[in-house]
View (cartoon, rainbow, N blue to C red):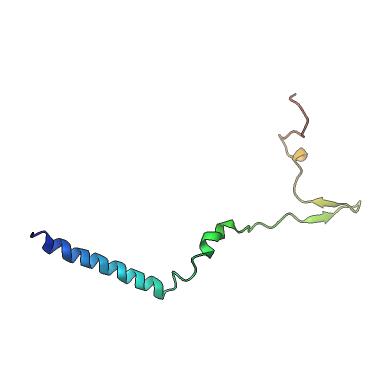
Length: 80
């Protein structure tokens, strides 16, 4: 029974700290927008490759085609 004299005040202090932290978070606006942080990782921040005009008048992607990458084989090419 004597342990109750220690545990009960500690539990009340512990609960008071959490209630105080919750009130602080609400006043600081920490709980205002719950949707955007969850969806932020889905946003694509990378700019798409731009298309530039070549001398022929055709458009060319800035991205390197697979056949020009070192160490890559074009589709249909077998082993050496």
